[in-house]
Image 1 (cartoon, rainbow, N blue to C red):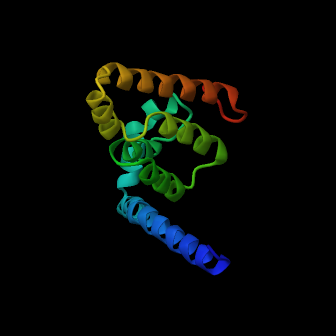
Image 2: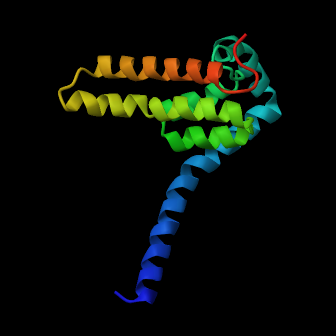
Length: 145
């Protein structure tokens, strides 16, 4: 294959990936903007703040976690970007999403393989909680009080 064909194929593949990501990330960012402008983001943050605070995160970070669990990790990343969290909080949240993303679809997939899906989901959730607690404790900055 010559260089021009490789560039053309690579560009096409890259644009297709960009389009697939944009279909998830752009709506997530728009949703956060609407929630922020309507005042609902503050309400959600106040309601979920105590739970997310255990991990050193603000309440609105729950939106990213829920998005990543119900949809894909990319939706969660889109919400995370829209929230504009500091590096420490982004690190904790990203670790949580990496461990326990797409929980519904992946649990269904695990069940089809014959594994005990409930145990796998429980293990992923426990791992997510433990890692988030450890990161909150170990990372410099405003740790758990």
